[in-house]
Length: 219
Image (cartoon, rainbow, N blue to C red; front, side, top):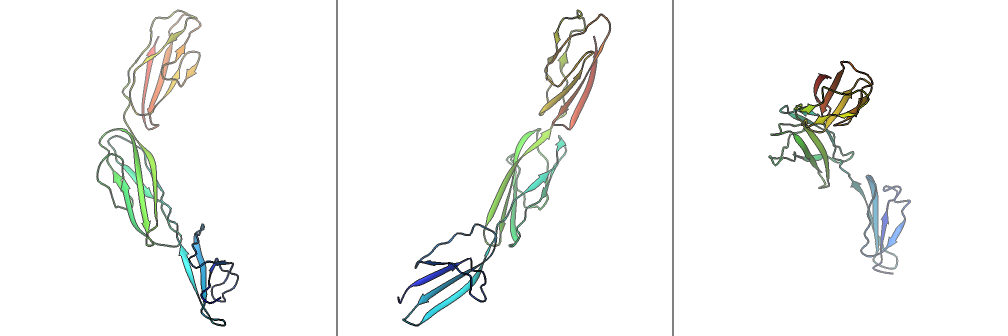
């Protein structure tokens, strides 16, 4: 039929114009779900025996934004390492947002000084030369030194349970307590002693696994 248009997607060979499943539609739309080089063809019948045909390769690119970052104790800077890529196209834009309201950075591998300890959302945006974009956001922890603030009874009765009163501060604190008969990773653990005597208890408190403080008390 004159005027009929055939679209061919995912042809096996663009040079020989073979291996092409067709879609009969004047305005066909096809979405490529995989990154790579795809062959697309179109033919239009202009008369009973005349067909105009053209084939082209289409490059489908997928940028992938990714990065890693250091962890540090405040006020040391946090350094970011760019790991983004695009297997076919060229990355032409990169932009870092650090999640603290400061100016963005266009540096490939920036280091950033946060103004206070805490947890922040850092974002990397990239764009390739085809206008395709990708964004990734990760949590960044800026640790603070532990402010030790706990108390424990120094006079105890054997067999009676006693509990730590703990008001220590820091970022994402973790604990390791060592008692005469037990250990604990709780913030305010309870413990007992079995007999009269002098005993030492020990504590190791870490802020985000980085800034640690150790202490001991005699009971």
